[in-house]
Length: 354
Ligand code: CP3
Image (cartoon, rainbow, N blue to C red; front, side):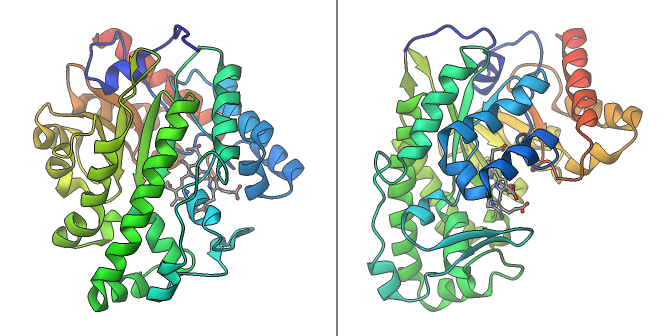
């Protein structure tokens, strides 16, 4: 299905090609801050059936696209679909975050893990991708995604979210080889999964390394970056005669942006703790940058929000290679009107400056 895109600014910015204005999308743009999302979630019963029913996944992916002038859509799904497909017993209890009934704690637990076939156990995801592509009908590009092996692995070992990461860090110090074995399985699973999303129609892909920032620099290279590098290396680079750019986002990884740029990705995500001018120097023209407004700025009065957006745009400076985004996901308490204020500010600025 080769189809021209009405708005390809996002893809061009990721490839550091000139654009008439800066593209913007918002991490977690389909989510609980939108009343229409909460209504669909209620209809679906729970979060997992929202993810696993392509019609619902498509409906919620489209909600922010229909409401706002966003420059990209992101597949509605979760980074924990892979361990779910590995039969770890994933549940999302309301307000509790994810939990696994069968976490990974011993070498025998790792032995039991298979690499899910994306066209079987995860077919609901690729079905959602093709349905969303048909529904967007060439308006804007669709982003596919997965978690980094390290980040997904932390949930599998901890059995859910964690504040201290004591279990996975203990495994790292006590039996690093076992942890590497787990990372290797996850890397293979993630690569197949992302390439299946691309084959189904994803026009860019993003790797979320939400917990890379809790590691020491040496651990980050050994347990997170190394595996993301393998994924980047194996990703499908072109589909339908177009480059399929990729983005690597390590939250808390500001100090390692130069190393991230070195793995051959097209773009690096930046959280709000690093100034984009510093980030730009670190990557030295090797990759595009995506970010990095403090998500809490969405609670500011509109004038302050506009000023903060301007600060981000100006900290990047002139020239191509910037995709505007938050430095992390939008939070459920945000007033949806504020997202319009933000998008208008970014679109308006970019027209003047280009
Ligand atoms: O960006 C998007 O709009 C696409 C959808 C998306 C979701 N999760 C939907 C979701 C994406 C890209 C993710 C990624 C994800 N999932 C990450 C990495 C991104 C990040 O924010 O760093 C992580 C760590 C997860 C795991 C996960 N999923 C957690 C910890 C939670 C609970 C968090 C919470 O706020 O309650 C989820 C659930 C989840 N994933 C929700 C959504 C919209 C909330 C579910 C609900 O209650 O409706």
